[in-house]
Amino acid sequence: MIRMRHVYKIYPSQICVLSDVSLDILRGEFVYLFGPTGCGKSTLLKILFCEERPSEGQVFVNGIETTGRRFRKIHHVRRNMGAIFQDYRLLRDRKVGENIAFALESRGYRPREIARRVQEVLQWMGLSERKDDLVLALSAGEQQRLAIARALALDPPLLLADEVTANLDARTAQGIMNLLKEFHKKGTTILFATHDAGLIKQHPFRVISLEPIKPTTSSPENVPLEER
Image (cartoon, rainbow, N blue to C red):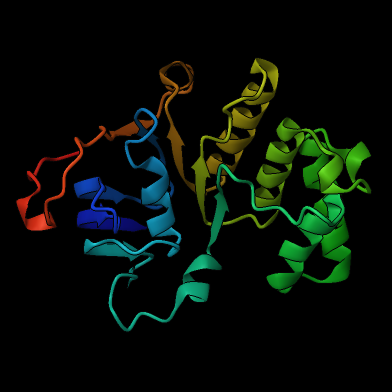
């Protein structure tokens, strides 16, 4: 499902956030990407989502190498993914239900199925009564739940989740974890970035740990090669 080999990410400011990362995630796994803020978890997910390019290394998603210079299949790769990032990426001037419907329309769902899925995922997230409200009227926690609902509505084979339970109350976070585990049981591959060791202890799955990298102005060839 996912393979990364000797991946580096160095931004133009010469800040290195990923150093020699190699990992494999099999189809159907639930894997935590664990580490403190600033260790590169979000950057790694964005590379998998084809939103960022690594400075060096190879990345394969569903057998497709996404790091080649001639790679042009971004939409093809993303069609098999759901992604939940910390900035939510909602259509803020549209209604709650429209945000989910738009995502489903873009994947070719028919109107009747869209209506059913919208109602279903809003119920999962406790947002049914906010269906016709503008996103701008939602609290931060409600927007977070809407972003999760939109991703799950697509029933993706691969789900990238970036700190999706952060800033939520314990009951809501527990409900979301239970829901993700249900998707996992049905075969969804989940890569879940978190800094919350307690969450991992409560819901144990395989853990890949990332550590912060000391500031460097070195090129990838001079960054210490260290398994992360």
